[in-house]
Length: 341
Ligand code: SF4
Ligand code: SF4
Image (cartoon, rainbow, N blue to C red; front, side):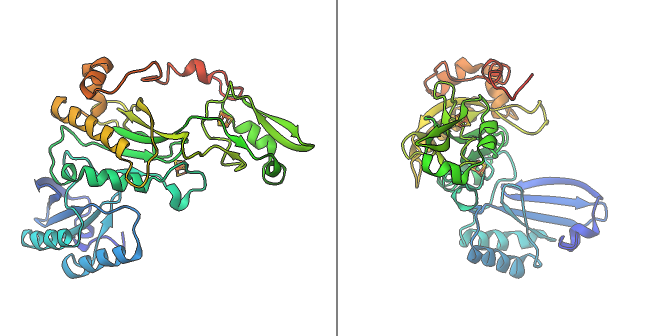
């Protein structure tokens, strides 16, 4: 509250109506007659201090010294009069911040922490986001999608990025390689054994030292043993791949929250621009844009046309590993000693 724009504080809880006069701009009108024009711009999400200073300077010069960030790291500036909107947009665009994302667009991609903060990523996340947002720039600044498209990325299979209309997640494809010299000094072995969702890890003595062993036939390559025990090295430049999932959402607007489902796997984890993953995402977006009815989210569109048709429309190959759902995975997850349904 202390940092809120004064007009928002004054009219708190008394807003009458709002409209979206152009992509990236919202106009809210309060019972008092006050108006607030909000201009939304995309950022590169992981912000360096120079960018933060540039955004603060824009707020100081053109937006009464106030700004706020959305959950997807868009930045919003509020002004109290229509004639102050265009100079704000011109300045943002001149400094490289695209204005958009308020309506039915591909909003800024949310990502997990990646190489920057987390200790277990198999890939970067902010890098994938930057490469993808460059490719879908038009879809952020022009609101031409049937409904909002929320894309997420996650840099390990723990997937703290959550559910998305389209999700790009890491996928390990080989069991961890164990550095037996380090296990005894670094890992609490019972904690590592307990972490495995399919009970594939056992304590073992290797070369006279206490260590661990993995039943590779059971291992589902989830990577959960790597955080408590870094000598269980699962990240691999070749065998850690990207997978693309479709149709998830957190909100209960229009339809229930849903889990996204796997539609493409084994995609090279190819920094710095991830061209293979980007191309698949663009293909899915094109099919959704041309095939969905107004206001259908990606998952609702797929639900209506059916998964078979989704694979036809996108040209993605369909294999038996795709479109597993929570009920379907019950059999495989039940093999764990730690999960009971
Ligand atoms: S997705 Fe995994 S590696 Fe990435 S930030 Fe979340 S927990 Fe860490
Ligand atoms: S925790 Fe995951 S990666 Fe590690 S052994 Fe178990 S199934 Fe394999």
